[in-house]
Length: 67
Image (cartoon, rainbow, N blue to C red; front, side, top):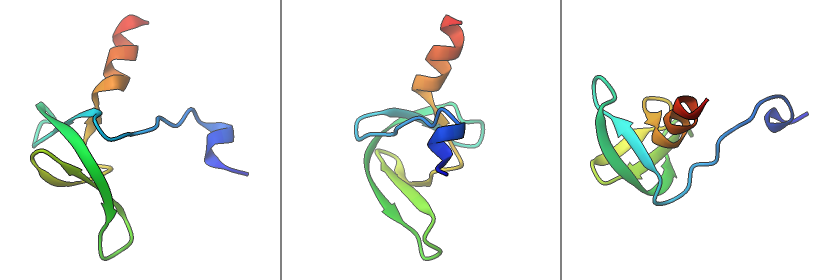
């Protein structure tokens, strides 16, 4: 079974806004994707390469505020 069957996994696309930095409060825009030497996903952003699991997705925060 796939993870999508159990979880509502968000799709990250080029142009999406993410929050990076020590406290995840600096906004940057996704420019592309790649993998690191351990085959982990990395986002190319306007503020450099960032590991996928070390950031916040702005579009998920917007959904939480609407609820």
